[in-house]
Amino acid sequence: MRKLLLALACVTAFAAHASAQTADEIVDKFIKTVGGMEKIQAVKSLRRTGKYIGDGGLEAAVVEENRRPNLVRQELNIQGMVGVTAYDGRTGWKIEPWNGKKDAEALSEEEMKGIVEDSDLDGPLVNYKQKGVKVEYVGMDEVEGTDTYKLKATLPSGDVRIYYMDTDYFVPIKIDIKRMIRGAEREYETILGDYKEVGGWYLPFSVESGLKGNPDRSKVTYEKIETNVPIEDSRFAKPAVEPAPPSAPDASSTAPKQSEEKKAAEAGKPPQK
Image (cartoon, rainbow, N blue to C red; front, side, top):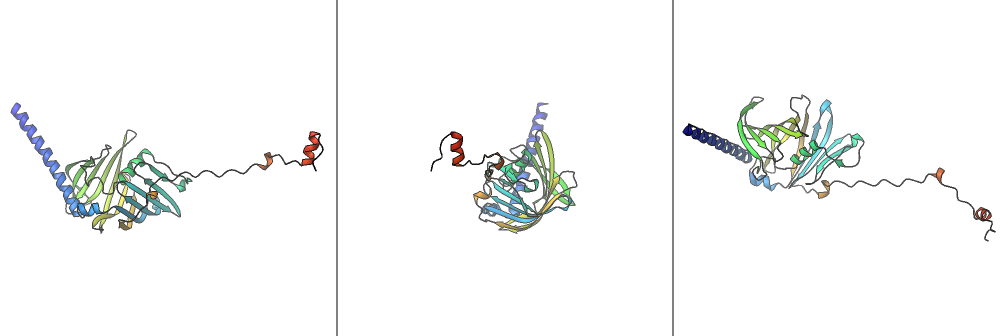
């Protein structure tokens, strides 16, 4: 019995090691396919511009800016109203003018988790060990007729992403995301496509996302992605709240100014000349 248990332990350890090696191999091929670590690390900032299409056909112009190490700003322009969601490495904030709010306000827990993840310019798979991300190979699956390797990435926050990596090109074409929000698990789904080379790095120009199982999706199609554009710190910093202008005095509550003669008469003194 002891020998049997030892043999099972050895098989289990070998299987775990093999899976880890398979995950490393897939990630290595992914990095090589999209340009290599040197090309990726040479990109210090990204600016993406394109079109957002949301529920009910809502359209908006979108601008997304990332700068190392962990700065991000996202803008939506809806009929001239520009909304902003940003993170400066410490504070996450947003401005939503379509809700009648012109001042910056704090993000919700769910929004904060999302913006922190978006602030990682490379994504969790690049240098994942240094980021404290655990990546495991968990089998194969098919996505719309395409065979994929499945990688499970567990982030330091405890959130989980399942990457479906194309078996021919080793790039993710779908990502399942599980987040814990106030003790409840929420699942999202992202579809990636239309990879193009930008500054030596292949990036997706089409991103479709939404709640898993929900037919309503939002889609962003990027028209241009620029690398190493100069972006000032002020783009990511939360703007100060402008003080309200002083209110004008209420004329109805202000006593009219009395003449010198009337004041003197009331005091029983002759007026000065």
